[in-house]
Amino acid sequence: MFQRITMILIILVVVLGGGFYAYKELMPKDIEDTQGPIYSTKEVVRGDISVGVEVNGRLEAARSRSNGIRVGGERRYFDWGMVEYKIEEIFVEEGDSVKKDQVIVTLDAASLNSKIKEREEELRTQVEQLANMASVSTDEVYDLNPSKGIVLKAPIDGTIIDIKVEEAKELEIGQVIARIVDDSTFKVKANLTINEYKSLKVGDEVVLKFPNFDSFYTGKVTKMNPNPIPYNEEIGGQTFAQGFVHIVEIEAENPGLVQNEMKVKVGIRNNETSVSFFAHDAEVEGFAKEQKVSNTAKAVVTEIHVDEMQKVKKGDPIVTMASKNIQDTIEERLYKIKQIKEEISELKQGLNNLEVRAPADGIINWLDVQPGETVRPGQYICDLFNVESMELYSQIDDIDVLNVKIDAPVRITFDALPGEVFEGKVVDIRTSSGGNSTGITKYPIRIDIEGNSQLKPGMQAKGYIDAGSAKDVLLVPMEAVFDEEGKTMVEILDENGNVKAVPVKLGLMNTRVAEIKEGLKEGDKVITGSTIDLLPSQRLGDKDSILPSTDKTGDKDKDN
Image (tube, rainbow, N blue to C red):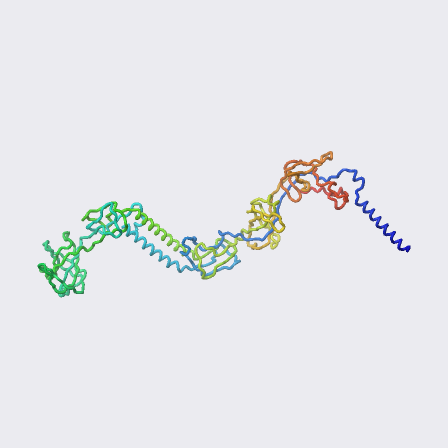
């Protein structure tokens, strides 16, 4: 019983003693209640400040269509299939390093030559058709003026006969407006008996005698029909059968008097003074050279340049015609001719693009063609990574984005290349933000890096962006700065120990100090903490106090 009472007493003593000790420790001493707050201060000093932003990301080679590898020639969307090749041989694989002008792919263009011939034939046809319509030579086609209409010209030297046009009258296509005959040579059609036929051959000379002329003329047999036909002759108003004859054609030079449909006797010379004439008379049926002038377009006659029986030379104007239809037709045909010529030029140029070469040094990527595959001018066959210009994509938060500027220099390091530092610069900062899983606002940023063959796409990179620096400026610790009602403030302690809040204008800031542009002067004491901020259980000098140690041997903590 005595032992139990003793144990109870010991427990009570321990509980009461511990409680009293805790009370003494937790409650501030009376002397502290009677003192004012104690402040921690730092002097405003001059120094240097630099601001930087750390970023990291995955290295990527700069992709650019200007550095992509494509088939030579210009892409023509309106005629996509005009020029095409087949991949003949591929000399690289994805990931290969290549040098500028290195052959990447060779092409086969077997179809180009046949297409060139097709277009050249089409061009010849178009030019000839327009030349015929405008009555000009093929060389003159390109000088045509559509607004002046067309001029029908004499196709040969000769005499105008049977002209059938009037000014201001519309002509139909194909209408014969006149004939031009070269009457320097006339043609005779003779009917020869079978025996007479046998006495001649093509090329033999014959004698011609016109009833109205005293002289004899010489002609030459040019054509003989071997098939006899029945011959009938009209005598005294009655027709009598005269057996069978062969048709023979003869040409002779016109002395200037022979006209169409004249009667003429044909014979062969026995000697210098004797001629045997054939049984049947012959007739002049025309001239050796005779050509019709036909209208080539539906149009109105604006001018007639010749008269009946007028002598003309080849190329002399006969009739001028004009109409809106003619102008439109000439313009359309000239445009078509121009288009075909351009296509031929492009096709021929395609024969010079049978080797696809690298436009610059780099690394092959996205090689997406196979031997035998069809490709066309301007078509990209792979990307070319430019290893001398790499890219780092990263993100910075809404505080850092205020400090980072376009063209800001960047120092880049890589885990794979210890000790190596590469230079770069900020080239793009997106104005649109994007959050992440933590909900913190982030802004995309792109950095160009001056690379070399050591760098490979996919390497992990770390960058330090130089966001600005200043020398010999006023600096204060960041913990002295606070916001109050939208104003940036610090508190200073004057010589009398009074606290005063001062608005300031800040410049550069990093994690330790801030640049003061206005509001303070060198030597001012800014408050960085006070005993007002202590918990009741904290004392000055405690290891967990927010105030710095009072150890006089400590440094003055003048960070820059």
